[in-house]
Image 1: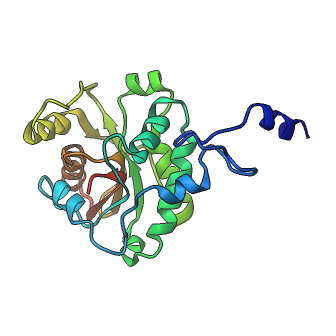
Image 2: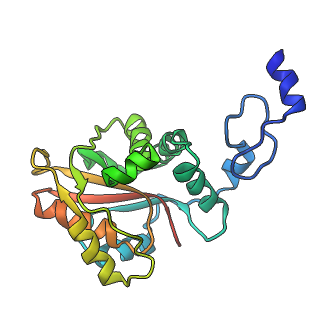
Length: 225
């Protein structure tokens, strides 16, 4: 009763589009969720494949949302990463997982691995958003996940002004496989929140393949078309 009364005085709004939340809705309005542009996961995402494959041979590449500057998906990612809402990562990871269930290739994956953050950056933010995306994916797909495979050993600066090759070299130096990682002969699904050039994912795919993985696929919550 009190909650209903307070919602009349202080109406809850969607954190993405600021429309009022209906009773039972949490954080994101259903109409906003439906309006977020998505990729058809039954069709090959040639743009994402081209981005990552130009650096390393990936087995499969999937992205859930279509990213555009100043769009709703960018707003979603901003809230996830910078406004202390890691639960959005788990939520969207579950939606992504349900969409991926229709792909037969997913059954070949042995382990899901989030792209790691440097420990200083993660301590400052309080969490790695990719961990939460992977958590949601793992729960729906019933595939184990681990944060004990890759580690970011260099706290790199923004790569915005670097070209594709510079980004790849920078990323290849910045990440490493943990000594106790059990990855030999496995097909790993490497997960990031958003892909731009594909250099970071490509560098990590190269490391994993060199470390003995049978195959590596990649998944991103968002990617440009």
